Image 1 (tube, rainbow, N blue to C red):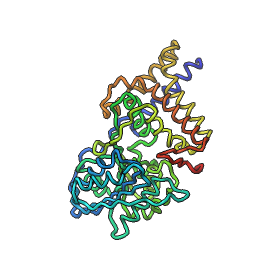
Image 2: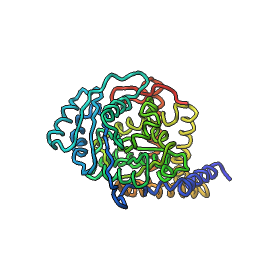
Image 3: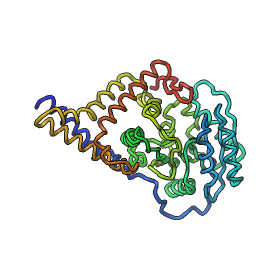
Length: 386
């Protein structure tokens, strides 16, 4: 067997493993959909906490979707303005006036960021402390300032949590996928996330796999407090998955795709999306150079070797490469359908994988420059994780 053939067989074997033994992640069938079953006799109380830093372009639309929730129980909102300089609070007040006082909303001016905290987590800490000081809500809804929610969003989250006794229910918000750059990179972003954290494994109590999507997380307050609160993960860059790991030790969690929560902010360019991915990519590798090298080699083997062999090799090597390329293109189809883009993008997955490899390398480079985890003017990668 030649080296070319061996590489092709290895790449094909990896893709067959991913297809049949990785929790069926690629099917993209773990979705919120319609909630089946009866509603609770007593609706639990919910406090939504929104950290916002320079979100004037989206906060009004986002806040209005929460103000228009049809949730039958007690529902309050706490918005934490984390040092915005663009009039975020003004735009939020406009939303409150436009909708009316259907729900109680508090807008807090966040205090200075203390050492050892990332900005978002410090804002959440302040919002949760304020939202729980006068009464003890049953659930906390942690959501981003650029997320729009369907009118039945909170209701469906609570019903799912109550029916299955989940301590965390999280939805992967539908991201914008309109521009060429978004079609090239966004479906793959979700595809790779599912590959790392198969949603079916996340929901299985016996599995250690834990993940969440920070844009929409409904959490039982008592469970969060028992896990040490937000302070337990105060320095984490990938805070949603870190929180999921803490909570899964205390109960069942669930994560799924949705159309009930969607991102209101488009990523118009390749550079914008790359910056978003690079912010946390090296943190995912625990800032370890050896893991970085292994990841780059793995990406080359899994995504680049198959099309190279299919086009430039011959014999068994070509067939192995072509089969691996077809398998990866087929595995990509369900998430492409979810995002309503052409199935032909499946054959571009090798090029997309190469782009993501560059984002990972850039993430490490920015960390080494002292600018790791850069977000809204803050470099937040403060320590090497162990």
